[in-house]
Amino acid sequence: MDVFVARQPIFNRHKKIFAYELLFRTGMANAFPDIDGETATSSLLSSSFFTVGIEQISGGKTAFINFTHDLLLRGTPTMFPARSIMVEVLEDVRPDAEIVVACEDLVSKGYNLALDDFVFSEEWRPLVAMAKVIKVDFMLTDMDEIQEIVKTVKPYGCKLLAEKIETYEEFQQAKEMGFVYFQGYFFAKPEVLKNKDIPSSQLSLLQLMTEINRVEFDVDAIERIINQDVSVSFKLLKYLNSAYFYRLSPISTIRQAIAYLGERGVRQFVSLIATSRLSENKPTELIRNSIIRARFLEQLAIETKQENSGDYFMLGLFSLIDAMLDCSMKSLMDQLPISDSVKTALVKREGDMYVFLKAYEEYELGDWDAFDKSISSFGCDHAKVTDFYMDAVGWANAY
Image (tube, rainbow, N blue to C red; front, side, top):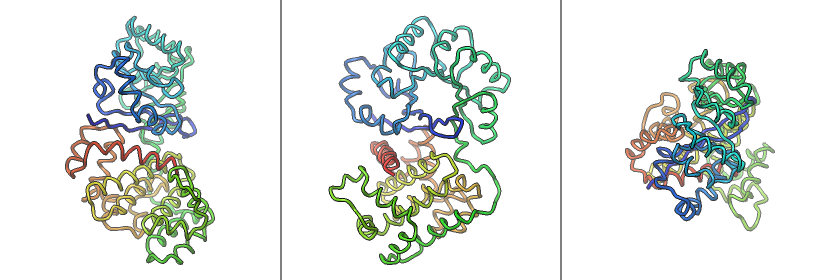
């Protein structure tokens, strides 16, 4: 069985990462049917994904995981370390006496509860009293009802999480209402939807990307470009000597780094570093997400035998640059010497390359049916997708 998993960031009031919600293919109940303790121990907990991968995919942050009524009654959350997860009780769970007892048992063992897509009714009061986090869907719930929820749960001291926050205006509104955690794609959209002057420091970074992508591969020229920026030099050497590469002997010079990475690797890394510095005043998840997209799309391109996988790396890396600089994508693409195919995909959201970006966006959202159709259309092996994603997350963590 193919098991897809993705993550969505959850931010605090300062737009720093608090946790990730893990999205599973069609939900845990369908992905892992008929779980009992013995089967879970032998097949689920022993798998590399759940013993090692959950830490990797959550980057050491709390992982929100959805649990159905039956999985809660079976005690399935106890297969995960209490310190690593938030037990998310789905909105369609019946808060009957059995569920209350099951949740009391989890809390007594050190697990924290979150109530998903919360709408208050008296039968939920025992779970509200136990919950650490209450999640409210801002897209499906009207403002009057949200205000009533805020008032109702306030005496219990639980934290409020605003879901489906898609704009910075909604983010500010939720903060003013007393929400402390936020989930949605507001962080990946420009705050100013019009062209503006780019500060000179950011303009110099765009010029660095321009030069590294334009210059013929001349080791001396590229070494000179990298050496001109101490920060890029430092990060390049730190990256190549990280645990991700498991090197026995360290790389100590830029020339060694260039020789090790090769033309494509050097161009990618310098572009990646420059892009990360463009987003210094933005949530760190913005650049992390760009790196994951870049690596994932590159691997998908290699798997499906596209002509230039490096272009797909750039497609992912620059896919959020408009949010980093609060400028239109078109004005930014006019300043970078990347291929017309990449520009068409990013600016017009069309063309052969765009279908790869669209597929990743579907994966990111956990829209598994749409993703299935997309990757089937260009002949990707479904079984490799989660490996690509986990590698991309690990790659971003190493950076």
